[in-house]
Length: 275
Ligand code: 7PM
Image (cartoon, rainbow, N blue to C red; front, side, top):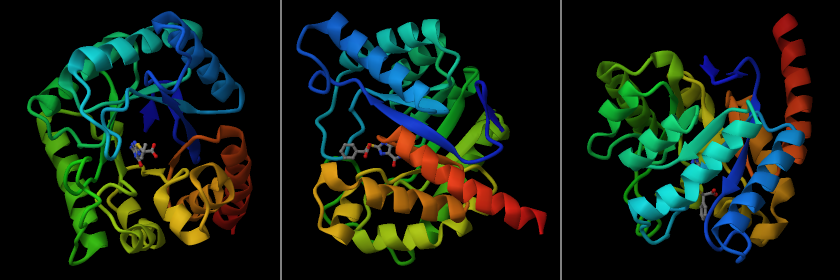
């Protein structure tokens, strides 16, 4: 498995780069792009193995963003970043036009919280030379947290991800380019999230590398009683549980701290393998 220049031979950190109008300076489009590039540079310096660039259209509860708006936000950043770094770039989108433009601008992976279920997405990605992250989500972002419900959350998420993987392979996507993600917080109660984290190994057994996004999420707020900007320790603990249960990519806001923690887990795991 290889994503751009990233060999997934041990767990890696994915740095989250939001490019929304409100996440950066109000100095206009070019200033916002410069802010994003500075932030990206800092995350690479801290050891991010891959960056995930998102135009916010897929965030829980977020209003829909038009194709034009998402293209305007994301593509200039991908282009500029590609000029200054070999670091693998992932683009968080469900829109076919953004997937194509991102790949043309040099993106290495499409991170789709809808797992290529939009019309034309499977066929489009099959034509592009990119990896893909397929995430599980129950319902749609605006309403998915109202009443998440499962008979057996592990079995249902597992079946969904294996089925989407198979559909991708049938559509002509290289199996070596497919990453799976349980989608923590996407149509899941607190109890569902904890059950998934505890049983992540079953999802790893599907046979594709697993990506997990737990950084600062509400479930960690529930466990600790802490606000979003006070969830670093909980995020790191969750990341370690995830990699000890087979996760290969940890999506995080806090690259340096998460990488330190992963190095400790990696050292212990490496000794375990030698026995
Ligand atoms: C508000 C709530 C803002 C939640 C942002 C979020 C994932 C993702 C996101 C994930 C993959 C966040 C989320 N989460 N993509 N995009 N996996 N593959 O916390 O868990 O960043 S958005």
